[in-house]
Length: 85
Image (cartoon, rainbow, N blue to C red; front, side, top):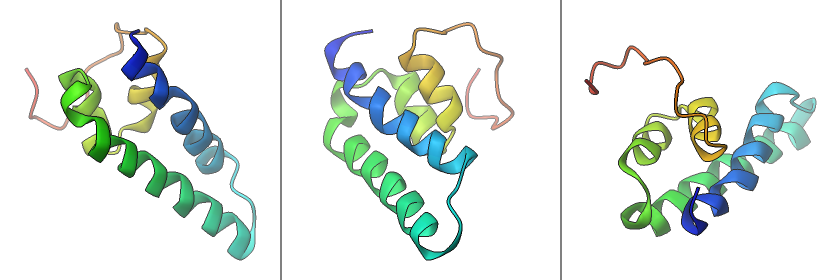
């Protein structure tokens, strides 16, 4: 993992934690929305520096795959979106 990819790991972990263990009520929803906004902003700002696979996962909101990619797990199974060979 290079430096530009490592900036994604913390926001992705935050997002995955918020999705997996959401807090109840309005506070939980706001926390989840904030994490989604943060990941989208990082993608917008860093798209040209990111590997194509990472961009693919983030654009399609495959956050688990994006986190695995950032952690160096490149042997994950292919998805079913049909846009990749």
